[in-house]
Image (cartoon, rainbow over all chains, first blue to last red; front, side, top):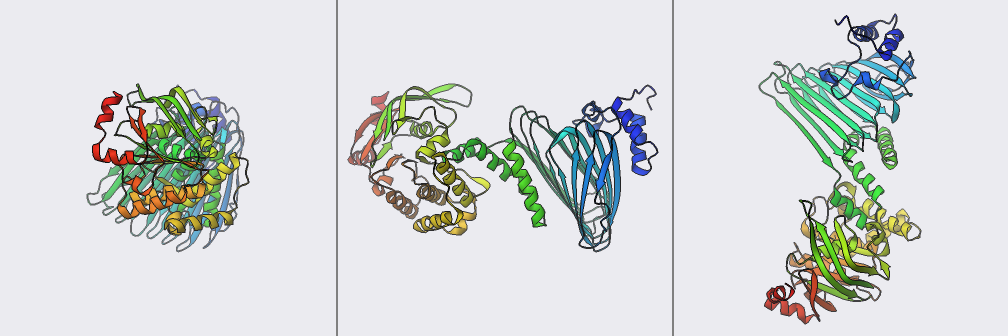
Length: 340
Length: 254
């Protein structure tokens, strides 16, 4: 609306990169043209200032997506690699999980230095379908990567999502779920581990539209000095969504006084017969446990890594596929050993 | 073996003030001997165990403490552990998510690596821990559970002794090992400690009550009050204390 809006180089680059695009990418282009990139003034972005994070982006870039050719059938294992080159870029895709089918979807993101990558996925789960969605956002100190997903479930569908985010200049994993109740189940889990100058944002909205829905969410994180973690979780329960059972937990560990973790758990409930709860806890490493381990001879860095790993690993323990579970836990371990 | 000379130590309190706790404590424990330290609450017994093992917030402000001739005061807790110092905690710490067996293997191999010894292989370690667990009546099932999580007070103390049997330290400090134990558990734990008595190993048994010393007979008993040793003697000193209480020593130390 503001006729006076002056676009930043990153905004101009993104609009340029999306020239002639259709669908979601056209919406992104128009939103960017109209409002610019979101800043702290936008409620949903108040801890993740995208305009500022993208201030080193000056030209259009390219987003490469691999693995989309895999057919979405029962038992399918789909591996998507999503890479944002230097510059502003976007890509999107949509998937339909057929009725009764069980599918595993793994998304691996990467962003080069001075990248502003925007990835969008629209997913529909038909009746009684099951989707295990695993997101791995590796350590990319210099790039900005924004992932957003719109996931719609039909009756009896199950969504199990796990994300592992080591942060970036700015990394955001945003998930919007429409939950019809009626035997459908949503299980959202996430882990973030942030070294200095890494930023990771986990934002989720689960909208319960029908009766008897079950939702569980467990997000755990840890941030070192100058790491910045953000958790925004919202459950909306419509009037029609009686007997919804929805539980949200975010627990995080500040590994240093100079770490920052911001959390906003929200419940918006219009039904009167529901069980909804949210818990949020921030703490520090248990110094007594650390001393105990060191007294037994375990050097401080190793003791610290073991304690953080045992704290963070819980959401990953529920990954059904053993190979994937061990892969993610091994990545977590490797990153912990390198933590400054 | 352990030589403490005129040791002064202060502790940072919760409101950030430095409070002197040890005020000129001297103590020598030769290899092969078991010394008991008895004293009323607040005399500095637990502080002594923490300052010897290097806990943060326990600052040496005077005197010296050496172990086999090595100055302990500048060493990290893990370095003191690798030298062979072991503390059986008054309140063993729960570590959710870390199985006891993993923890012990990490600890043993970290100590061995620090001493320049080869790591113990997985099969060798399993054999070792099975044998020690059997000795203390600890099931393999318990060892798979996270360190101390959900264990009773007695089970935690038994695990402390099991860890000592596996790590085979040169010197053990037992801090209020009898607290929270019923008579059966006290016997099991004491049997474990007695099994560790050896000519090359020293022990310091810190206790408020005499009853532990019925099971672990010390060579020397020291009475601690107000941050120093006020009297030393044979095992009969413990019996005398049990009968007469600490009052007369509190007066002397003040």
